[in-house]
Picture (cartoon, rainbow, N blue to C red):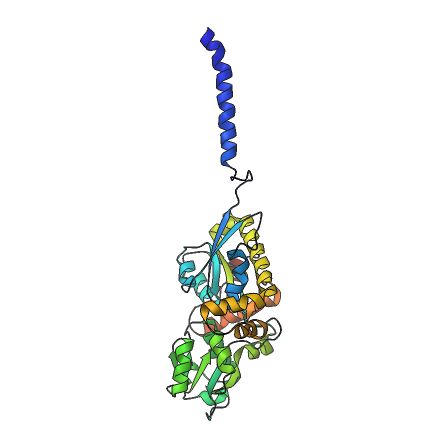
Length: 333
């Protein structure tokens, strides 16, 4: 009987201890509920590096989510492989993925647009050598023209607008596919007649008197469609989004804060990027201010129309057979 008298109170005390232990297990060492972690993968160029600097260095934080960002040269491969639930993809790559990938990828917003914070000079230039007799896109018939990616957004826009504005089909020119850097070398050596140069290479070449710009593709796009060309998108695995909606929204908000931080501190950060990746801080500031930048625009209205236009370019280039359904592939956070 004495044993039974002590058993009930002892069991009650053990239960309290177990409950307390379980509660502590749901908390971090600081006594607060543990935050979810969202992992992202993105490219290494300056705009992305600048926009993510605040998060990567722990200077911009959230009480709702921890965001871990990896910058990688093969960011698109990593994203398409499902190694990360969230990240950036070029607009053309996203269009292809919506048709060919097993992942239900969805776009939350724009990411890189071809317009600077002060001017809209863009980065995609069709160029020749300064002494060339080619003076406009109309002169490209029968010529060797370099492009950086046969299935890329810039190439798709180039071929679509070449046909629309000048009546020239891709069959009327010889396309040479290579990287921007190698295309610039081929142009300089005379192995090709003209080249579509983009990213930092396009901006640098446009400032070099060795070359002549015969077509500013991004300016043409703005003039004809009223909005900047969207180079890349912030995307998420749809399955992950449905299960972690609040965390994804918090991660998006934090990325927006980090983008603002980078822009506010560009004078200090551009020299750091130049020291690590080469070139000069002035070049990177020029690119951000006048040519291309991060802009997390929600996909509605004209922005959605712009993306559907670019998807149409990709389809016209034969990369996809149909354009994605905006109701399926666009999800505002």
